[in-house]
Image (cartoon, rainbow, N blue to C red; front, side, top):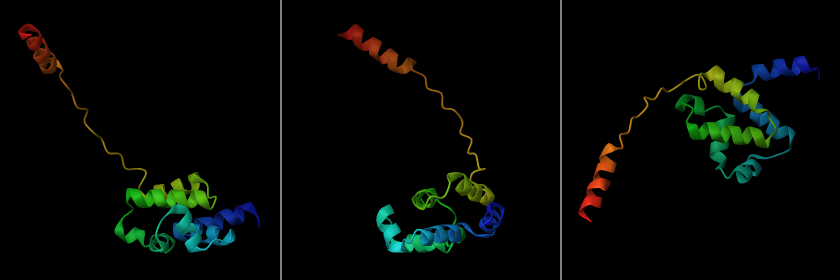
Length: 116
């Protein structure tokens, strides 16, 4: 099959369909994958049927998908493309830096030195 045609077919597939097709190409059953990844078969069923989309893509589910893709030899860049299309990778959580003051801790230690 031509490389350009294969890429167009991959674009038309959902992430679950892509993983299922790659698993079937390697003659692996869902039970084989579940045993190797130490997941329940119901989790794999949800991944392959894209049921996780309705529930929201959790951190754990992203990890399961990445591990599944690695097992069936799908490039991580392709998985990142799917995640970016879902808007998962574009979210940045800005965290304010926390400032610590160490004067209080040192003052207590110095006062203990004077007493002892």
